[in-house]
Length: 144
Ligand code: FES
Image (tube, rainbow, N blue to C red; front, side, top):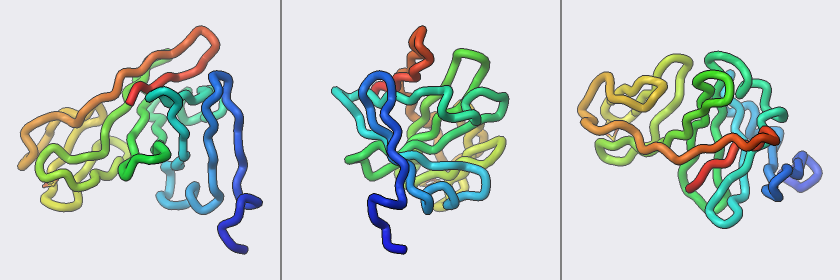
């Protein structure tokens, strides 16, 4: 089957953002699903109820904003609180990879914790964070 619209599920979310999940995108990493998200006025909106992994300790999601070359990581911290981290390594800007308990750069081995803080260099600065806000309706807004 080709990569046609027919292979994708489109989910209309409450604040008008559209997230497209392709079947192939869900299998890129053993446990980390990737969703594509269309920003509206610089904000991505995810309905938390649509992503069970965002409702449990250790939960995480890779989000690929349409129009952006790099994904971001959305990480559950505690009920109602999330982190949205850039995947751009602060050393020389390779794309980092999110593992279960840490974030690793494949280029020179910098390692970050799940909060984006440096555990091991050569990177010296934490991963950039995006501002997040959970609405009363359970919509997670991430400002790019
Ligand atoms: S670019 Fe990530 S450690 Fe060098």
